[in-house]
Length: 211
Image (tube, rainbow, N blue to C red; front, side):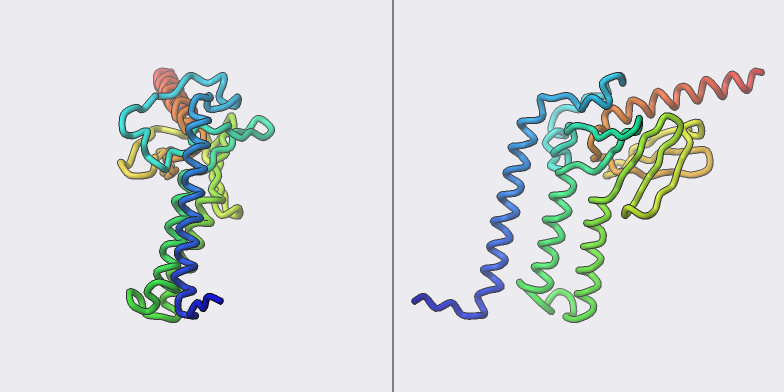
């Protein structure tokens, strides 16, 4: 009979988690390669094609699943975070918790409530990425966070869009700015729609100014 000391169980658990994460990442990569030849989805089939980004940018793991089928509901297009973003969030959350509670408990952060606060904060942030939803309707954009809080922004108030050079787009409406994650399923068609909307708003404003 093989005897395994109790002190070895945390390391065995960490090894098991690492194997599980590696397996999930491999399956996600295989799924992405199989789906990469498909279009963004029927929801954007009547929208102009969005900008195509090439080179090393396409190797970004956060893009995994970005060309998956876009969800629709009653003439509303639903944009949610990509599979790559969710896998990355889960992997980082598991890694942080493994370090805090298994690999080096009490060494990097004081054991007890400080570690619990960091662990809980990471879990909440991870959940927020899973629940994030941008609803594109014909007259407005609805941002829903945590499945509870939502705000609406009329397309008629949209003025501009900017890339913050990190992981977000900034949509500038008449009274406020809205930050949206870059890595959303169907974001290419969404960007095209936004640019067309901005151009239309500029023309409408110009006509109003002349009249």
